[in-house]
Image 1 (cartoon, rainbow, N blue to C red):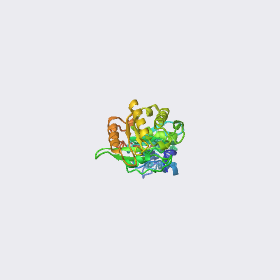
Image 2 (cartoon, rainbow, N blue to C red; image 1 turned 90 degrees about the vertical axis):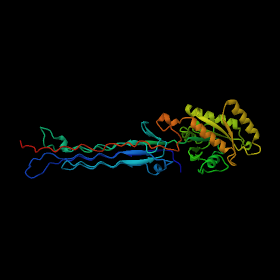
Image 3 (cartoon, helix red, strand yellow; image 1 turned 120 degrees about the vertical axis):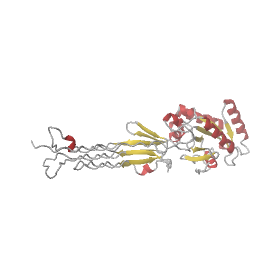
Image 4 (cartoon, rainbow, N blue to C red; image 1 turned 90 degrees about the horizontal axis):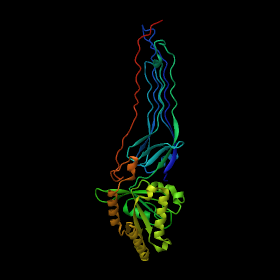
Length: 374
């Protein structure tokens, strides 16, 4: 099962309580306070992991609680801080607060982290409250309760190339021929119900990630069919392969199909409408596909659209298409650059991002001299 959107509950660890304690040593009847502070609660981080491709794990477990800090002890011994919890998510996960809508982060590089919730501070021990007028305080702070909130996780697949088109246009067959991906292939519409990623090897040094995306229908921008579930995954791509079915037996006009999907892309996002496209006429091996092929060639030539005519089944034209895609990717930048992601090249060559942490050390209360008896 492919899960690309889900809500997750996170709670930071509670802080440990401070300690009320006094020095007890021979010949030191009034040793003064020496209660240590409670430890901080653990925090919860989200970390991008390229080995994951879905948020399925969070479908089965949605509540996560970080470890609490331990209580302070005498002799100025501070409690240990709770261990941080790291939740792994796929590359391309967008994190937001479900209730406020606050954008928390966009995980686009390997190892990149976002702080989901911070642990609470531990309480102060009574050594913190000693003053010149109160040298034996009998108070300490309780640890603060850990904050909590619901997160909204939304996965937008990271792919260099997205394959779009009407259902049953041959998108899955194309991806299976170009890569080792094995999407479900059958002779009926909406065979593909979830995106599939594959890596296409161009030569020894170059490769790109291609995404087989569910078919579009009119009204997709308003949510018809798979609607936004599909269009979301095109936002990260640098190039779209727009598949057209040249088979007249399909009962559709390929030029009408092209214009319908262009309108759906524009209705969803102006940036998506401006995305680079290569038109791919598929099923050219069929004997009665010639009239549609000629019409599409004339249309693309008159509108300045790049066109490749192929047969995904026989492999005709695929080598030229792959070389053109690789050359096109070399000449354009990635949409991720605007979001702070990697714009240096193919997503297939992921870059390790920073791994932030937070200092866990707490200052140690100094040992005070023996208090004098008033």
